[in-house]
Length: 526
Image 1 (cartoon, rainbow, N blue to C red):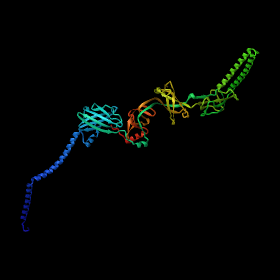
Image 2: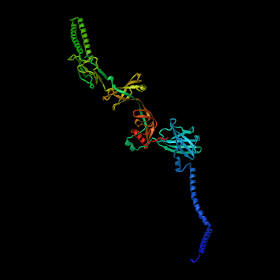
Image 3: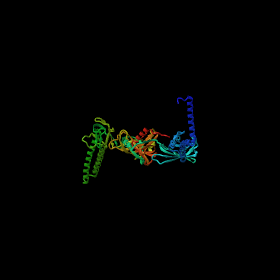
Image 4: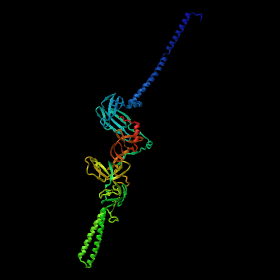
């Protein structure tokens, strides 16, 4: 090989390459179907894979058409409401759109429905809509709609709370569409353990006898029918005072002793009259005996009898004068005058002291029987017809914790020109002396008693926003239920709308539910 020239070596290499190319071409020509089959096989594999994908897509589309809806994931996406052009909840399906709003422009909340086709507003006249609401503790409510302007308006008011599950069924031609959603408002969950810990008592709404009460303001006063003013009736010098203000005295008990010259004269007159009467009686007896024995004339007997009768009259007159003064007819000291209590009671005022001169008409003691007191009331003109004699009343002190009962005994016949109110009076027992004259009190008069079908306790009622609510209990959920209230009593208030008989609600400490609701920041989504 070393002796081969360079040009011959090059020629040899070219020949080898040419032979290789020729052999390769012969191989290809000898098996053309195999190469085609390989290509075909490779292409079929790819086509089969693609066909599978297309078939899957076709199957999905077929299922969509047959079922009239989406697959689970697609249906969920399209069933979730979006925000619509009117600010409501927008649902779409197969190019059809329905927007549901709650409008309060007319003062009462109502549903409004707007319809769309391919994203553009369309006249809702050709669409029939029925909405079903499911609330806690209530039967489902079916709501129909009527056309108004460019929307459908519900034929029913959507009462608060706007917390419910909503089922929407819309029919347009031969196509039906169903949508649903849920919204919560004014709800908070509390377990039985939490309720027990916080002292929240669950009560049941139901029928109650309500005592309708008229609330008035009054003042305790002395019972003037059992109050006396003690006057001496005789002028004199006060020798001693045996009772003071605040003392409880008995009828006939000595209050003070006065030395009175006028009393001495009265007693002297009585003593003289009694002596003249004794003498006249003796003379009469003697003359009677003599006349019966025919010793003296009848004229003497008749004269003696007349004289005795005159003496009796004078003695009786003197005795009655002393009795009118309240003085005893006989005393070792003719000038001593004992002033005694005319009733059982308490000395409320004392205006006498030893050594002073008491006039015969001076008011030296005020004594009152405090076992009963008066409650004076001011009744507005519009409430007069609700107050009647014999009516029962509950009286509560404003300065301390005390409560009593009484009866209306008097209603004034006149209405004040300035006050436009009348006076009324209650008589109330005061056995323990709790009710002191001058004490301000609150008075509740029972103006009516009526049986109502649904009532709740007054302490269960709370204010939420501008609404008066109670918190209904449904499982472990509390929901604020706005109420329309009727007649109110001391413990219960009538429910006209918002709660039904048998429903549970939070009674005592319901304000804790309100606090929990505030923490949860419940929203009102319209």
